[in-house]
Image 1 (cartoon, rainbow, N blue to C red):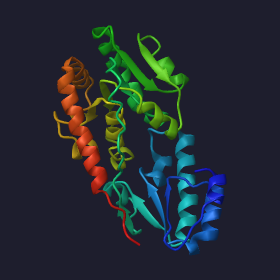
Image 2: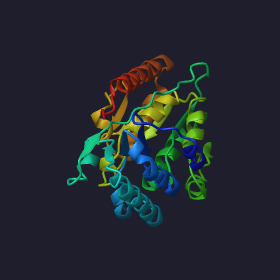
Image 3: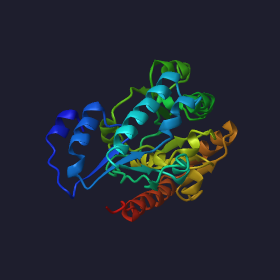
Image 4: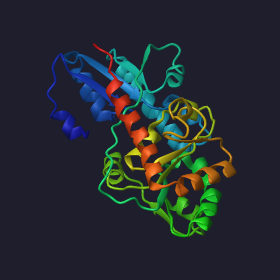
Length: 287
């Protein structure tokens, strides 16, 4: 929501405002002026923003910027008697001196069932996952040598383009806003989605949002056999869990790409049912 939209809001004693990651200075000022008219102000975070500046996998500037935004937002929200909502228990544990509530992420995937399945496997992640992106390069190179009709799709900048430059049939999409990404992913129907996740202190607090992204694109996922995915993925039914070994990942991707359309459809349907059920069972705390 833009600052212009915020100014048009009408609030009352039943209004609950949830800030997702950032509010912006104008948004925080507006909230502070009106918080006495609200039922509650909640601050929802989905990764360890307060310690982002320490995360070796993040660029130093992105990490510092993320932590500063968190500190400013949380400083203001606490002065409104706001509450902190975390996407996982592991993330909530990073705030031992703060009363937190765990609100698991939920998203209803919009699957384009009318689109014919495309011979595409993909990784959709930001530069914040640069180590995972670099790790995928030799894996994609091997898969592309074995599947001459398949396309690998990834979101990235010039650095990502350079990483994959010598691999055929790699499509690098430019970064896009969350709204644009939702629109894009709801229109495609791909085969396999990749969700590698290294076991780092920062990643240990992440949630399973890649499950929603992969399912929304009509695909079946290959996931790292680590938190958060090992806690929700039923191996072989909703996707495949794999240890972080390049050879294991190559074998898992080949297995899914060679799986029949009907079997992939069955696995995808299981993931979709889980996502929908999870959405229905998630409830927000009362006032």
